[in-house]
Length: 182
Image 1 (cartoon, helix red, strand yellow):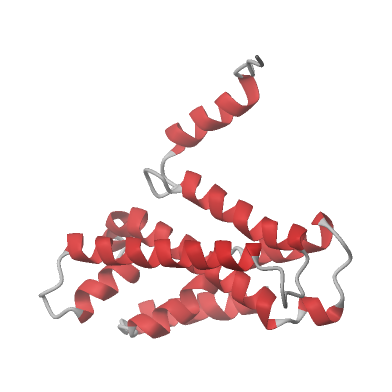
Image 2 (tube, one colour):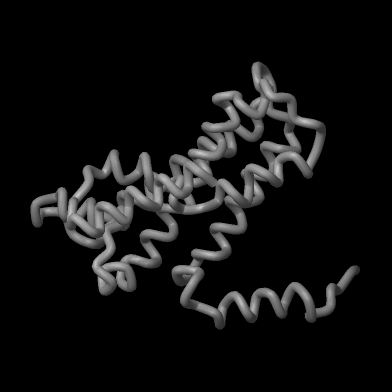
């Protein structure tokens, strides 16, 4: 929670002072401000074997979180670009275009960020499937992969927050539509 509050404070300061962070500074902060830490990290203690302090504080666990959070943040930034621009907020899309000195188009930026998402998604899968030298239990690693799948569903078409229609129909399909077994 403390990391999330610090990261949100950083974004509020950028907005208040009208600062334009570098893309690296933004991304270093953005995967935390995406706010999955308070959701995913406590859930790790509920999904599988008891986590030791060594595992909970391990860099591997942090890297799994950072990789998943980066994908989620970029998916959110792509789908929420229009709304956030209207609100005066910076995100990965607007920063790439701003730092591109007028040469980088919206389409170029989206293509680049989708490439980064794909690269991070593959890296996350590699980390999840890695057995040799891994301290994090597979059940815990699977939680990061499953959250990545949820993020893909959430941001497949819209920004996931302002599009109730798609989520409503998806939830109804899961809860109400009969499952046909052959």
